[in-house]
Length: 123
Image (cartoon, rainbow, N blue to C red; front, side):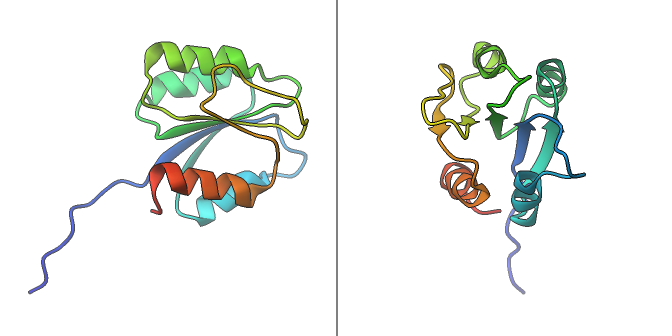
């Protein structure tokens, strides 16, 4: 009889991004296809509400587009815990998020997936 491995829950990501034009964002589809659980927020308030409802998220992905305040969200998460990696994504070259652990200067979902896997492993 083969010993079973202990069950590890899949990592859960909080993705805060403006409401996509399509029904689902490419980011969400890529992350979910890679077996990550994704909780999506479309405003600062919603991102903070989800974080406080689900404090055991594995990482936060904040998309730097109009309408979302990365520093506000990241600082709130950072004030609660330093165990949650915060990833800031922006299509603008010089865009930065002061409280993020990682600033990606691209919106390419593959680069995001590589970073998330390097931080959390491959579910």
